[in-house]
Length: 123
Image 1 (spheres, rainbow, N blue to C red):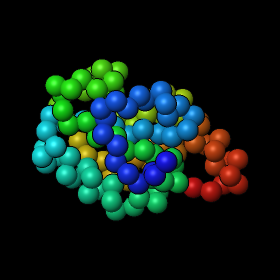
Image 2 (image 1 turned 120 degrees about the vertical axis):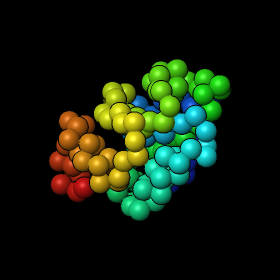
Image 3 (image 1 turned 180 degrees about the vertical axis):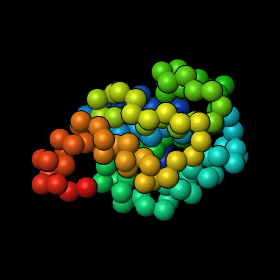
Image 4 (image 1 turned 135 degrees about the horizontal axis):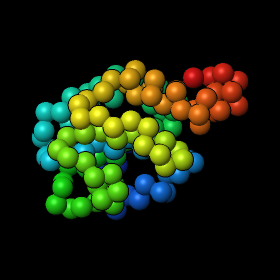
């Protein structure tokens, strides 16, 4: 799986990522919404940090399509939702977030702490 690719939310089942990856779902009412462009620009600043944390980016900009992610996470307007490998929501924000903020949220989770211990402290 290419961790740097941005997946379209249509047809994506979040449970397929359990214990494999951390979905970062970007929700918006339109692909041209300024917050979408800002969030994607912020993610491009450090893709290695996201890949190291097994983040998979999913983009959902069509509320009418009612993707499985949209039905499960029920966003309102623009928002990002970071889901940990165990399926729990780690972070939910109504505005774009930096890679640093996302990394910190991930690094605080018990699963990530276990991963870094297992990998010898990498991070």
